[in-house]
Length: 498
Image (cartoon, rainbow, N blue to C red):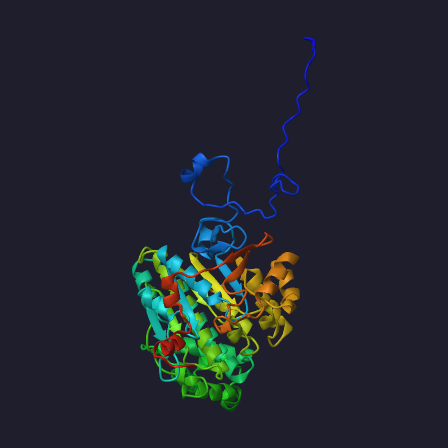
């Protein structure tokens, strides 16, 4: 070999992603995924470059883990609006079939927000799902129903006292706004009760008569009026009321115009189909400084009209209390309080009759304050399509469109055509939601049904952004408080068989 001869060295071979390919050479047919750990930038700063940024927000209440990555998702409408600036208004609309965990997820949000100092307000608990949670938080439980409690729809609540305090503090304009808001809400509730009772909205003349009669009632009485007092004013026919009735000076004509209105108010004030709950003074006035839940579980499913009326009354009373609290805070008379208002089973109130969508919309739009998050919960968009008129459906659809975020659980395939134009679901997201609504399989080892495939699984959508699929797992404490089958479990502990 000459000194000038150079040997050619071959580059060493390297195994591929699955090792040395070939028989007997150690090829791996199954690749185990690498373990993933999550930590703060301070904790994992020394692991560079083996780190990756998270794709899920970490601001707000810890809700669950990403189904694909296991990353924690923190999510609630108030934190995403106020701190993260991810949504334009602090509201969330929940959609999903029954028994998949909608109320449980909302309870998780409410409990976490309570830790941030936000007061949960459950305006109508039908099952009840939220009573144990509010009790554990040291809140106020208000029970309504036949023989259980009354809610006077003409009770201004704290409005009079708040207006007096505002005037003493030199805030005349704010005091007038509080009084005007209280008047508008009471008028809205009376007309809503009439619409539920009659299955049609009151006429324009009847609304004008009710409006003027309420003003006369406020001037004449020093005590808190009830519906029977409103009926008395209309029967007495003061000049201001007859003027808006347009009876042309003919008392017989006035009686003809108000005949139907009197008959409806008699039914409401003397224990008719709806009157027993609303005809008496308020049993347990709502407080503004504690978590609160209206327990209406005693109103059965067969009493659809009463359920709808009670829900609407609870929502009205809750929003009124929030407005008063914020007005007093603006004037420096009360500490600033933030609220998380929960409106469950929205569909029941909307289906009560023509015009109910307008009533609900007016209640929510009258909320002029900031610092209040809302959660509306229903089953499907089809619930909204079943409303009496196409106009009502379009208005109710706006509830979803205006929500800061939409959270969907398992939904049927037929729902996708209505939901996708509103929420903007990709085909993969649609397939995921449909798969979550499948029925559970039979577990032969345990001799009972397994968990439904969509239990605790939700897709969080904000605008046109890709959804975040999560799974909500309960802690031991939450399982004890949120046990909706506690009666069956008590029977098991006693040794009984279902």
